[in-house]
Image (cartoon, rainbow, N blue to C red; front, side):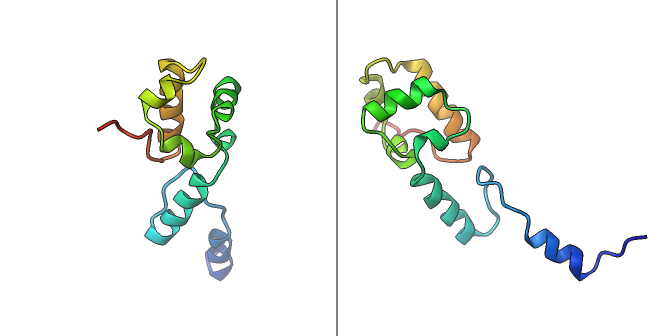
Length: 104
């Protein structure tokens, strides 16, 4: 029978944290959000290449840039419609990130 001692605890600490999941520690969560904010939009899992190309053409290169835009601003982009905005919102939410900026 295997005993769960120090070795198993050490292995548990070495497990990589999924960047898409929120962290229990607020400091780790802040680091995760900052890392995502500075990540290229192509790093969002499942974001279609057509949407990435459209955003990059409009100089929206990071996840933080995308989050700072509203649906109205994105709808003004060429070849970027409501469906593309929905996909962006869905992918941001799937990574436990704030969605697109709300219009006031």
